[in-house]
Length: 168
Image 1 (spheres, rainbow, N blue to C red):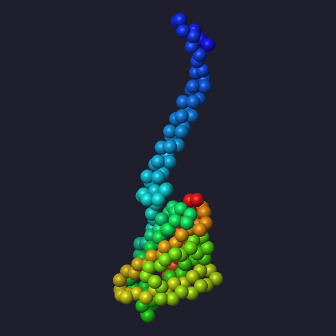
Image 2 (spheres, rainbow, N blue to C red):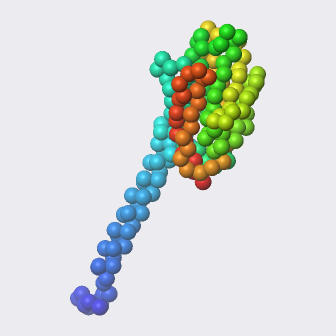
Image 3 (cartoon, rainbow, N blue to C red):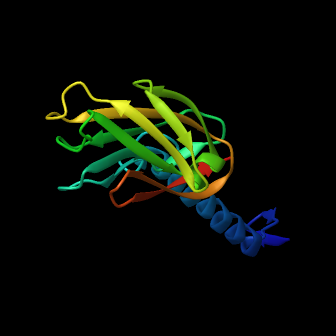
């Protein structure tokens, strides 16, 4: 107790300073969480979507960098013109690592044929006009947590690699 004038005052300035510091740390943490959400770490935002491949590559993949376990995730494959085989078929190979970490729930357009291999699956798609870009969408649901490295390629071409982080 400290006497200030006619009043006895109980002051714990040291404890009060610690409380203020803890409060400010809490404010900073809340601000960082809000900023992370706005930037896309929780779904939509500038950091949420990414493109792998691109440039003059035959295959470009649009995907979400961050996903939630069991929630739908869409991979959009853009196939460059004049990549289809003579029979107007585009064959897409998806690596086993992606197939083990996520369940394919839908594919648009529906593949004309599928084949399972030891290191991945091959999906064959008919292309109406081989002189134009083809777009293929895979809807997958992540079944495993944390960081997953995946690779997709057109048969006979180099693979395009990307990473998806799956939140619990």
